[in-house]
Length: 197
Image (cartoon, rainbow, N blue to C red):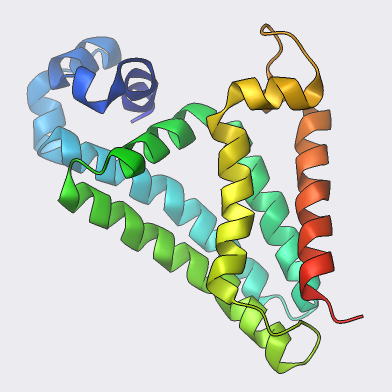
């Protein structure tokens, strides 16, 4: 699966063949077909595997009774940013597939996985609204704002380099200062937008 992510990022989904995957991973083609059935199914398995880790983290955060709703939002931001910045190639490949939408079944499968993960964030926002600690906001568009900001940063390395005022050799995705800056910014946005003062 790691080799597939690397090749999809380098050559695109269409440009990567099962034979390319088998050669680079040093396995035979029959093994890939046996375990996954097709390149589309391999892609689905990768997305499901990556999303299941985040889903576990989100469930853990939501269930933590020691945290207030805004602390839960902060923890989700920290986890999302850390996870996405640790796998920029995978994130780009995933969003490239979503934007192109050429494989309807695969596209729908990816969306279903995202919807499951974002339900937790929506539940936390709705709970904060019910408790009257959050303003009455649109939970779905609040999630889109949060995820959209992360996506914009991740999908444009040029934009990241401009933001950190660095040259092309600099890698913002591995820079701790940039990660912390992004986390702080997202927390400030969510706190200013959600909390009733």
